[in-house]
Length: 166
Image (cartoon, rainbow, N blue to C red; front, top):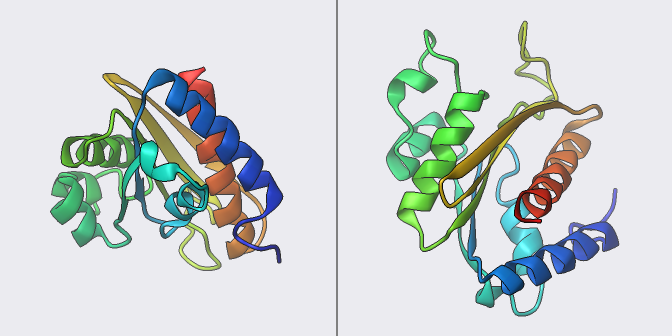
């Protein structure tokens, strides 16, 4: 197991920070399965207060509704569920509306070892990136134990954000 502040995240965050500063962007996160790890990786960088606004850790469905205004019907048994494109897009929009940010990273997934189901196996993670009015969402299925799934989600979140603003 590696440290949360390992070199690969540090390199990604430095690259991301340069792009954020150059474009005068402020970022927030809305995290479920990563439990604040993206925000932690970002704020580990000195000077991050110049480009990081806030992180929402909305692990439960109730907190997704309460803090990010995710509609209850999206989270219900008859809806797409917490691990879905619709929910991460809603999480991103909610975080953008609740923060001073013009860029948001949102993530929800099944890190395991339990919780997988047909169509959503353990390792399924949805990530959304919202920059101003542009929003993109992507489904990933990461392999490995809980730690590796979460770590892969953080890395993919950062890489996707860099790509979006490049």
